[in-house]
Structures are given as structure tokens and as C-alpha cells.
Amino acid sequence: MTLPVGAAIPPFVIEVNPAAMQTWAVFLKDPNPIHLDADIVRAKGLGDRVINQGPANVAYIINALTAAFPGGTVKSLAMRFLDNVYGGETVEAGGTVTAVAIEGDLRITTCDMWLKAPDRGAVISGPAVVTQPAF
Image (cartoon, rainbow, N blue to C red; front, side, top):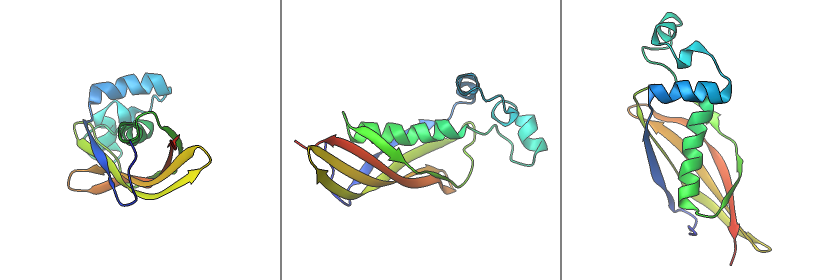
């Protein structure tokens, strides 16, 4: 699929499952208790729910990109973390195509991407570049 400049990246919506954070913690070798224990989160003054791992949040953006550009390759991401994502939240990844170029046999699509949380807006944002065969 190709999308023109100005096109919206179809949203990727996911409910952040606190149990999945335990799996991510093992996979990422990240035993930080803010991902696993709401009491620790409260004690640190960071809210009342466990906090999702940053790489998992970026993965939601990658999922939106791979769904929008089947067969494409995510070449770069430069995400800025703006806020936390909490267990039990439903977040939405999406974005907008900002540039399309053809270089040789590749179509290079640049997008402004974001991950939004309810009532707080973007919690991650930044540019991403996806390549696909041009023809």
C-alpha cells in the first residue's frame, strides 16, 4: 500500500494489559518494579497503576506502520517520550504522511507518528521513515 502526503496512518488501538508487562519485563530484562507493582508506582508519586515499558509503547507505533505499509521496512524512528502509559489504558498509535520520495527502486515515506492516551493526548511522538519497493 502507498499513501500520499497528508494521508492519515490508520490507527492501531490496544488495551495495555498489566499481565503483558510482566512478559515484557522478562523479554527486555527490565525488572524495574514500576512495571510490575502499583504500590511502588504510588510510593514514587507516579500514579496509581503500573507503567508500561517504553519499548512496548514504541512497538505499538511500529505495528501501526507495518499495518499501513505491508511489506515495507521501518528504516528509522526518532520517538520522544512525553508521558507514561499505564496498565489498563487503551492507547492509539497513528500519524500522518509528511513526505514521499522515490530513490532508485525504493519509495521512501516519512511520517509524523504518535501514541495517544485518553484525556492526555500524545504520550510519544516523532518521525518515522518506511521504505517499500517503488514499483
